[in-house]
Image (tube, rainbow, N blue to C red; front, side, top):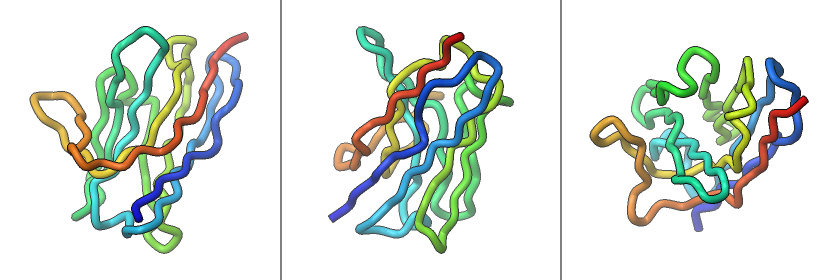
Length: 125
């Protein structure tokens, strides 16, 4: 059974940093492309980053490019999401998802994708 568990969220001031972790079980992190989505209540869900299964190539939405970095530890079967220079508009619930793909410039989850439970990130002074 595929399972994804996020951790590391919380409250941070603008300009600060947080690192989210996504621990995978039921599959290896180099088998599926894994991505991060975020959602603000009442707004459309946004796919923000992914890491490929084959060679670990990384991809980012323009809204986070240059500030956030996705990586993986195959031994620990964990994907990380380092978020730097956080802004209030980064406030959202963040979800780890697998498998994912980029299509037409947008990250999307496979129909059979597994989702983590979601973790709150709040950027506020």
